Image 1 (cartoon, helix red, strand yellow):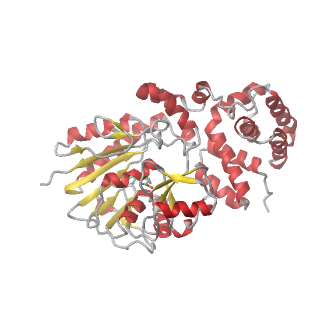
Image 2 (cartoon, rainbow, N blue to C red):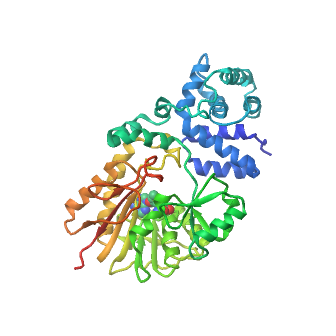
Length: 456
Ligand SMILES: C[S@@+](CC[C@H](N)C(=O)[O-])C[C@H]1O[C@@H](n2cnc3c(N)ncnc32)[C@H](O)[C@@H]1O
């Protein structure tokens, strides 16, 4: 049987897999804690440590270098990560020094690196004695630390594009985001759910910007949310929740959600319309379509689900098999859709605070590869929009190339398309569409542009 690792050893292993091996943070964390059979307290600690190291890696790495006489050899990289997990606790958490140090020393033994015990003990004790030890807790995160913790190509792009606001955007991209919920209007309303949270001792308040939204004072495991398994609520940022209002879906509409998985926005639209619309949800990734199915099952919603490339002829899509909640046919609307949502694949630069592994996995060169995919989606899906229909193009990117410049290029080639004004409670107006920025608009960074097809 595999040896049971302590939380520090497990977090070192997870962050090593994310940063050095390129694995996804969410999936690796989920699998590791499941395998280790942790209780909810340890699960929370492993999550905090793994996210923390991914978030502050650039800064923690620089601190580690200043403590080490020479870099740790490549074959012992796991020891480097034990050190970073220890430093994260001393720099950003209220862990008592002795616990952070002793548990990190134990982690060396558990990960078969007994030789490193003295090294880790020495480095962490030296750091704990230094005057910067609790720097982050004392509100002392300087702009230098923030910049060290983001890849240079990302911070440079933010500074070039967003000028004065870039300091807030950079800081927010490194910080923990609030946990936002979307109340399933088919089961209760926001006031009732806030009362349930209150009874469960989960402090929270109504979201100022999204009518279905609730913001928790402190994040909790979804297991603590009343009725979560039965679909009472979903976890979704305010900026993502606003898509449903912008798309203006009504009960008789035929709707295509073209990049739908894992189904956050599909589900919101279905909840709002009491599951009474014709919803076709598709995604190019079969495994993500399975997640979409699970989302709809938990929320007791139905849609036709297809796997396929939405930048190609939609008839080439295949229906997802074995999904209880999906019809097994592939009948795309031949007369077009009244509403189309393109939640396009993108750089994710607006949601780095939620997915800090973006810092480690996304490359500048990826953007050039994403641009033709986004344009291809716009062009093909436009031809599937019914007269007078609305198409919402959105991304969780804050880079103009993927957003308003992408739309400008589309409008130039598609003279019948018109960008339509729409209401958004807290966003920046651009020449085409609207943009939210993390650290500026109290939500994730999203771009939205609504396009209308002429009536005839
Ligand atoms: C931002 S995510 C969508 C999130 C989803 N709308 C939600 O709210 O949960 C983008 C999705 O686009 C999918 N995708 C990428 N290229 C695609 C394509 N050519 N056709 C259809 N889906 C695509 C990805 O697999 C991914 O699931």
